[in-house]
Length: 88
Image (cartoon, rainbow, N blue to C red; front, side, top):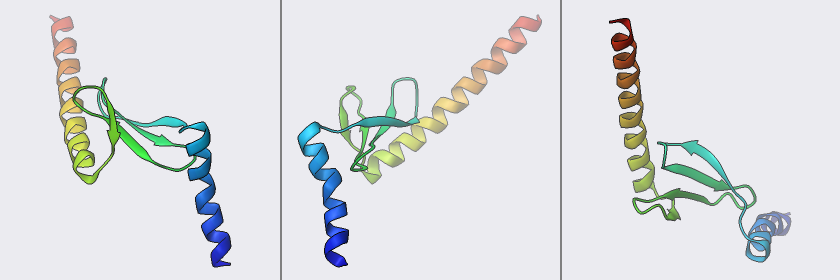
């Protein structure tokens, strides 16, 4: 039974090493920063400040969550401002 678990965990990694990863966007942090996950091996990546894909570490998870909060507050503030300016 333990051998069967090891084989099933190894198959996605072998698949990705042969055919490459199949990354899908799992989270939109900002317009330019996104988080990606491989649909086979569940490897997680994010974009760094240069736009390159890097592994999603706990440090980058924290950075992305802070960026997302800042981005949401900024977009909400701009929506309120546009709504008020259209009234006058």
